[in-house]
Amino acid sequence: MKTFILAAGRGTRISRHIDGRPKCTVQLDDNTTLIEYTVRLLNASGVDDIVVVLGYRGEVIRAILSNTSVKFVENPFYDVTNSIASLWFARDQFTLSEPCLIMNGDVFLSQASLDLILDEKNSPVLFYDVTRRKEADYKFGCENGRIVKYGKDLTLEETSGEYIGCARFNQGFIPGFLDRLEGLIHAQKHSLWWEDVLYSMTAEHPVLARDVERTFWAEVDYVEDYQRIMDFYESAAGPHQILASSLAIS
Image 1 (cartoon, rainbow, N blue to C red):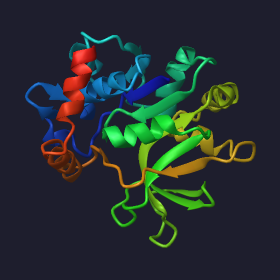
Image 2: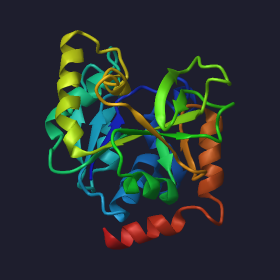
Image 3: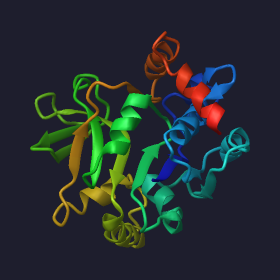
Image 4: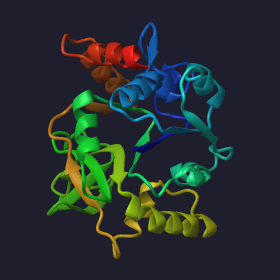
C-alpha cells in the first residue's frame, strides 16, 4: 500500500515544548523518535512504499530517516500553505496499481489501529475515534457510516468522534481525487487541508467513516497528547515488541 506521511507543518501549539523541532521527531525513548516508530511500524506490516512530505526543518527528518528506504518530497512553501499543497507536491508519487494511505506525521498509531486501517476495504474512508467526543480537536459528525459534518466547532451533540489524521482509499478513486486536487490548487485554494479535497467530492463519492474501535492512537498537538503516547508506549502492553520485530526484519 502506497503511504504518504505529511510532515511539513510547523506545529506551533507544541513547538515551544520540543525546542522548535518538527512534531514528528518527539522522542519515544532514547533511540526512537515518533517518525522512526511510524516507519518501522509500517514496514513491519508489509508497507515499504512510503513517501514523507517535508517542509519545516525538513533536514532534521531527513537525517533521522537517512538509513531507511522512504522517499522524500519537499513543500518549499510550507509556511504559507496548508496540507493540500504538501500533497500536491507529492502528486507524482501516486500510483494507480495499489490503494493508498495518507496520514499526518504527528500521529501515533498502535499496531491494532494500523491493522484495522490496512484491513479496510471501503473507499474513501477517514478514520475516527468514538471514545473521544468530549476531548475531540477536529470532529466528525457521522450518519450511516458517512461523514456529514466536520470541523473544530461541532457541538457535542453533533460530534460522533475525533478524526485521527488517517485516510485510506482504493486505486480506482485516485484519478478523480488527483483531478480535484489539481483543480483546487489551480484555484489558489492552497490554504485548505488535504482532506478538503475529499469533502469537495461528496456529491460524486460519499466520504465514509470508520471507527478505530477503541484501539490506541494519539496526535501530538499538545503536551497532554504526548503524555498519552508515552503512557501507552512505556506500558507493559506497549509497542516495544513491535519495534523489535520490525528491526529484526528490516
